[in-house]
Length: 113
Length: 114
Image 1 (cartoon, rainbow over the protein chains, first blue to last red):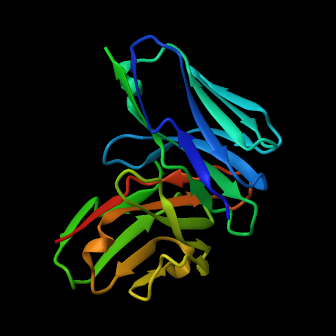
Image 2: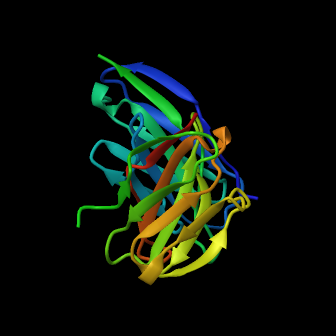
């Protein structure tokens, strides 16, 4: 059974710092991995999707890497801003006919001004 | 079409009442998913549709839960005889249905059972 773990569960950093969020998964049979952002009480916003054949994806100040063989992904946020404060969730797409997502519990990020 | 739409955004109901939520996916998306998220946890898969066919249901989906997607367009999720443990955020997502396609989520419906 696929399990997704995110470390740390919470993180507080001063504005301007570069930071790394970690995600690990137990079964490497995945189609892809997505990183999402969730603001309190809101839905999920897709940030980056990495196909299983890719090693990384970049969007603006965000860079996500994937090492499928070791079951790890990282989300790197450069020059953090208070507006980056949110919960960041990673999810893997199961390699079965449903393509359902299996999520980690998220990392709650607070960027202090 | 600006994205996945869910209604209502919030629902407060008394224990034992029935509730129904609606999801309107992105129009060209064949696949529609329902997830449930409790406080401090990631979303958990409930069920999914390909067009109008419901193809998989999680064990989390008890007999009190039913979902439909008539004509492969919008979907409804009904909970009968609600319990306090049903309090959660119910999220809908849609995708084109190909394995390399992103899932897009709605804003969710927050259910509180009192």
